[in-house]
Length: 227
Ligand code: B12
Image 1: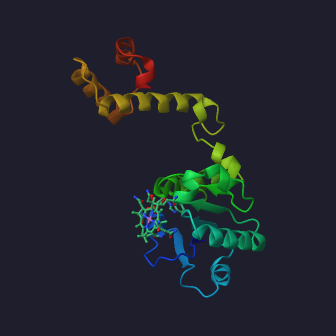
Image 2 (image 1 turned 30 degrees about the vertical axis):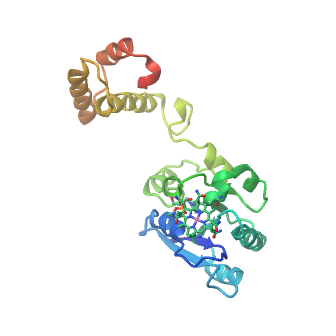
Image 3 (image 1 turned 180 degrees about the vertical axis):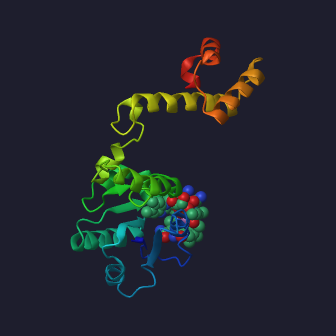
């Protein structure tokens, strides 16, 4: 089933393109998501327009909020949609929630707040649900988190504590992270070229056993900076 993400641009006194929503909407995978932008400045009845677009395929409603007059309309619309669809997550993003995230989260109809630029956050939120990896895992019997709070705590790797990843897989990921940073990071040490070449060789072949150069590097530099 294709899913939709509905984005709302509140009423404002300015008539520019809703660039923030165009930016975050463009970050979503168009083969899986239809992105609908409802512009409160153009709709005679924005709540009716939103309700017409929101159905069972809607994953969440995103609202962009600038400080000032747009907050009033953002609040009004958010509350009305929450009342009509209590199960639909409503996410606020933009300059105002980025500056005052706690204040915005204190509003009961706002489920989540995105701080800063939204593309990456949407990118990471996007896989759930609908991403092929998540679908494969579901088929294999893994249980996906069922609330936004649980997703916020969710981590595939989980520092080795997650039931999703075996201790061996976790160790492999950790080694990959170490060598990846070492192979592509910047260091001025005299040994950097031979060690870098070795690290790249390991990454190319997924060969992380006998990690003697890891020991050398950790002895030369503080472990904190390298892993
Ligand atoms: C273009 C612009 C304008 C334009 C258009 C504004 C508009 N409403 O579209 C005009 C000239 C009209 C304007 C007017 C004003 N502006 Co102005 N403007 C800008 C400017 C230069 C760029 C904004 C932009 O389009 N960026 C590009 C888009 C892609 O980025 P973005 O909006 O930041 O969105 C990203 C994130 O915020 C986040 N995001 C945003 N919304 C959402 C929603 C969701 C769901 C998610 C997940 C993420 C998300 O993801 C986006 C992509 O990365 C910014 C400064 C800046 N460098 O950003 C100031 C800025 C936004 N403006 C500001 C101000 C103060 C004003 C005015 C009040 C000025 C005045 N005194 O009249 C007015 C009123 C605006 C209003 N309330 O409607 C402040 C906002 C401060 C605040 N606390 O909100 C800024 C930050 C400038 C500043 N440093 O003071 N502005």
